Figure 1 (cartoon, one colour):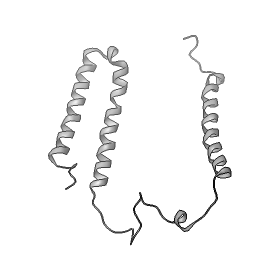
Figure 2: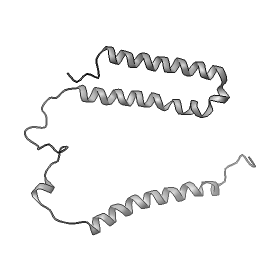
Figure 3: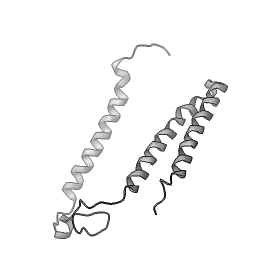
Figure 4: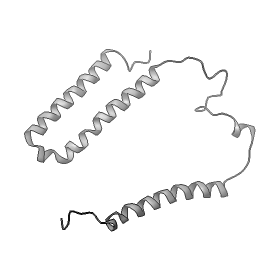
Length: 124
């Protein structure tokens, strides 16, 4: 590394990427709005709920299982994300890093076994 101090010019590629990303998003929205069809029918303006015809009150109770599965997915997904830095640096961490990862994976497995034992993923 030649110098430890960051210069403003070092951030130019990040700034250019940010401009391109925002420009692409905004440009795509504007272009599709300008060239897209403008037909407004009752079917297009009506509510759409995953292909199911909307009938009745939206406040009716339904099973909490959907939310439980979603929350469990997020929890286990975030835990798996912690494996990426370990995989990148596992050689520098040595045996201690390997043991810590085995402990982490063991706790992850125990959590998964707990979820299975509580039948949190059963849809019955």
